[in-house]
Length: 329
Image (cartoon, rainbow, N blue to C red):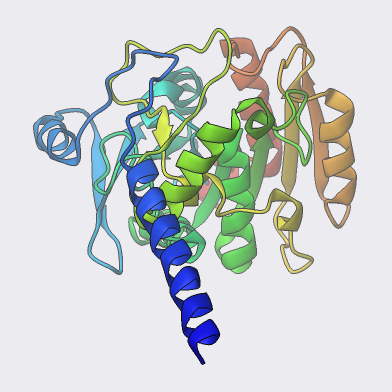
């Protein structure tokens, strides 16, 4: 009996030590490679309230406020009044970083909406975080329905990089709500490999401890060489562990039930994804109502007006305008 008590005390001591060590590690300050200063939720709220550009504010089913930026066309061709493009941004970014897409696509005659994910840009929520995968996907599905309720019954989701995963999630969640899907600059496998392998054992232990004891803490820095946007406070470079691990990209697939056309594209100079790997993803998209686009000269982030105008050309082919004669019949 004494031996049993002694073993039990030893085990309790070990558990207590591990818990204490984990708590200490979860609060251990960590130096970051970049010096970007992001927003607090309060600062995001103030900026959102003072934003004067065209936008929408969506309240999610759990009460969070999400910011949706708008790019409105000067004129809309007859028969396209109910078509809208809903843009999902890449990791670290926000909708404002996609002015490069919003302007040329809207000038092509399409209303463009850009969602800031929860915890990103001018949306509410803990920075660089989502409570879980289910909530993040629910936000995406609700954004589609929100745009439809504005009067745009044909919604095309367009995602770039992480936004490509977001667009696939929306297609998996509400396939019948979508009129088209545009998937840009992403694949199941990247060129850069797993950045976790570059972390020291101490850094991994600190991140794991934060994941257990402080799941809402931004314990992980998203870092790549030559990153842009460090001067933009709306960008996010510090993430919670649960946000970065909530999706298994290999489980993301365009559903067979999706009847809408799909466009998959990538730049031939993309430093993150090989054209061949993106093609492999494209080959897995079901059905024949799909196209593959290679942007000549485009990198992962350097995408020119000419490239976005190719997206407009695809939209024009999939959503042809009515001619004036036909409208007068």
